[in-house]
Image (tube, rainbow, N blue to C red):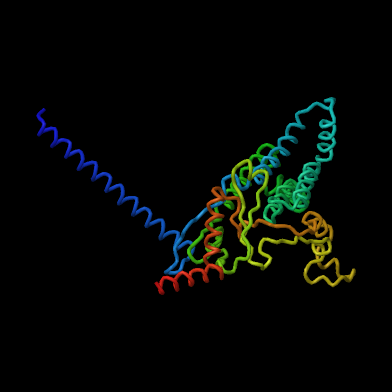
Length: 345
C-alpha cells in the first residue's frame, strides 16, 4: 500500500473515530440534560436555582434493619427446629424451647411471647430500628398466630364450617421466610425514598415514599451549625451523617411515651363505669407496654431532615461549609468589600 493510500485510510479512520466521539459527547450531554430536568422537577427548584450536589443514603445505612429481619427469621427457625427435637434432648436452650412449645399448643403463645419481647426490647433501645412502622410490623408478626387460631375458634363456635376462613395454619418456616422477605423489601423501599440536594440557594431533603415531594428546604443563612455524627457501623462501611442545625430543635429529639398515654384512649373519662364502653383495657395496656420508650434527649439523625448515612461525606461537608460561609453575614460583607475595592480600582 502506497503512502498516499495509507494516509487516506488514516484520515478516514480519524474522521470515523472523531464522529463516534462527537456522537458520544452529544449522547452524554443529552443524558445529563434529561437528568438535570428530572432532578429539577423532583426537587421543585426555582428558575435561578442550580443543583451543586445530590446524594442518597448509603446501601449500608439501614444495616440494623436487615439484622432485625434476620432476627425475625431466626426466631421462626428456632421454633421450627425445636419441634424436631426429642423430649430428652439435653441443654438449657432445649429445655426453654420445650417449655415455649408446650405453652404454644394453643395459639402459639410461646412464640407470641418471644416476638412481643423482641418488639418491646427493640422499642426500648431507642435506636434506628425503633420507629413506629417497625414496631407496628413486629406487633403484626407477633399476633398473626393468634389471629389464625382465633379464626378457627370463631368459625367452630358460630358457623357450620369445618375449617376457618384462613385456609392454612401458622408454619414457622414459611411465615419466617415471608415476614423476613417482606421486612427487607419494606426497608429497601423506605431507604430508596430519601434523596438530598445542595443547590446554590439552599439545602433540600426529600422523601418520595407514598406522597411524592415530602421534605424540607433550608436556606443557608438559616443554618446555625453543621455537624457530623459517625457511628461504629459508619466507620466500618465508610458513611457518615451530616446534620444542619437551624436552632429550631431540628435533629434534637425527646422521646417520651408513658403507659397512661397509651392506655387512655380518646374520649376516656376515667370513670370506671364507662370503661367497658371504650373496649377491652387489656389490649390498651399491652399496646402501651409495647410502645413505651425511655425519655431522653439526644441527637437524632432523622433521614428526613439530615444527610443520613451518606458516602463521600467529606466532600458534602466541605461544600456545605463553603456555601454556609458564602451566605453568612461575614461572607456577604467580604463580597461587598471586594466589590467596592474593584470599583475603586
